[in-house]
Length: 439
Image 1 (cartoon, rainbow, N blue to C red):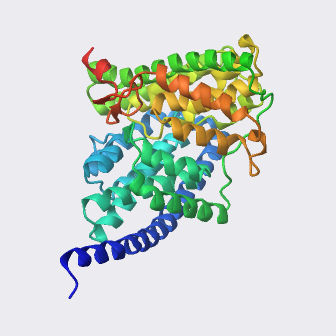
Image 2 (cartoon, one colour):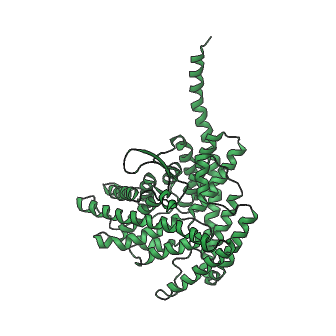
Image 3 (spheres, helix red, strand yellow):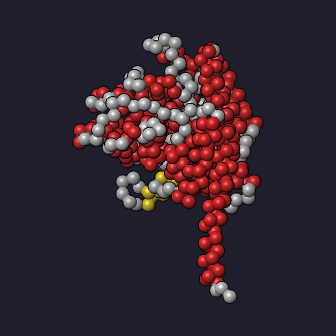
């Protein structure tokens, strides 16, 4: 007769492969389902962006589109939607995510891009992936802990499928919720679902996001000092971006509490700003939509010096007024154009400065240094990772580390928890933007 202790050991031995097989199955399901939806989302955004390029007059309908988004959310009972913050709460506190969030944010983001609002796509895709995977978890009767893991799987698969960066997506899903802690229990399902999501998107023709950097220097004492200085500038820019993003909704709430009026005024402001930009750059729509072409130009070494400020202004006005989308592509835009402009002042190549800016400002506003380092690897190294065979990646790591530390406890996501101090090994357990909220 086996003893109780022996029985417990046998059960533990069987639990591990059973858990592995369970997450292998779930990761495949989430990767396929979310990968397909993310692919549809990619083609929808590409289609409406092209359509807006052919018909610039659609910008005049932006206020009307904002009213439509507000009414759509009101009818669906999600007028108080908090975007990506709800996904973070779903992972950390197992807050419920409604399946209706996925088609709702899909449609609203597509409409925002069609009519020329300034927003990205990753915030929307994280909500889409998180809500779909959360609902699948409910259908499978998962317990609270497994439900959180499957939500992270959806985030990873969606992010990976849309950007073609599986390592970045997997680590981001585990790192973004609680700063200072990685949810290692989710590493197998997040990595597998991200890879499968990329495969699905790739098979259906979605290209991975990648850039060819120029002027990447070797790691020397001088270049190290130069990228540290850049990291300081990126940290300041990250703080400014976060404060601006949180200030806009407060100003709208104070002066325009009616959401319908807010959408009309916000859309009108974007139209007005677009025409102001025409005073020195006639016919430019660089700051409407995601602005991917400008990011590519900055990586190529060309950017207007005022571009980063204008993109922040366009984005905060758009998202603060209730239009939908994400903040990360505008962050890439801001970091790339600022880095391209500032790098030559410190003796660095503008293309290299743009690359540093993309990943370092991303780190500063999300507090995800490990994700940012993998992002640099996947965005800039190509399939062979040949660019980083030497010590060049160390320059990216140094710049990212400085931006992470000096950006303080600000974040794009108010529900992000800072569990450990950035300055000493100390457990602090505070919400991001806590000081800003008190002021």
